[in-house]
Length: 218
Image (tube, rainbow, N blue to C red; front, side, top):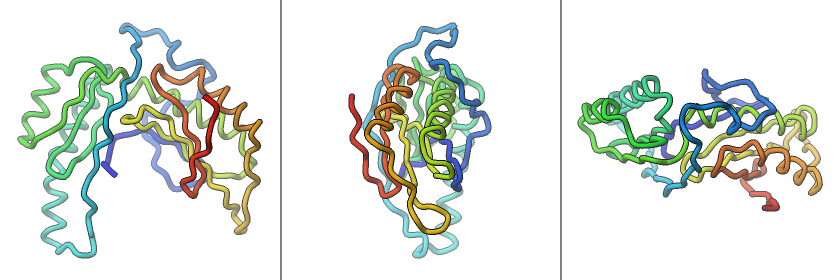
């Protein structure tokens, strides 16, 4: 995993919900009035990180790892807060970090990132901001909640690299059983309800809790 700043909603499971996550709305996210033109989101190769064997790290090595990430995370957080109309996402790499912007990166934002002194990946003109995607994550979560059996847990997140809204359904019940799987007709109805509200360029992917991706009609 890359530690990307992404958006996620989970129901009945231990997932963090971003504090600025909007309530679900039934209107398409792209229909909101905006001062800037809506352009299609563009996927990029998803970065990878070498796995960390936390059990093998000494206390000093662990402290050094977190110490290096602190200034990077602080710089990304500053840019995220100061440039909500530009900031798309941020993530950590093995030796630095990466940041994406909807259009060209503001010079002041680049100055903040440069001040860290570590190498970073810069992705410009990716076609969306974090705040563009927030409403659609909440909206998809509300639609999935209506579609699955009562009490079933699931998660919804936006992958900024593949420009996909990812839904994961967890079939297990509280007593160790399984909720019934959604029928093909129910899945079709769900995706037909979701797709019109997706931000331009984004698509939907639904998987089970075992990681199996459910084929969806395009």
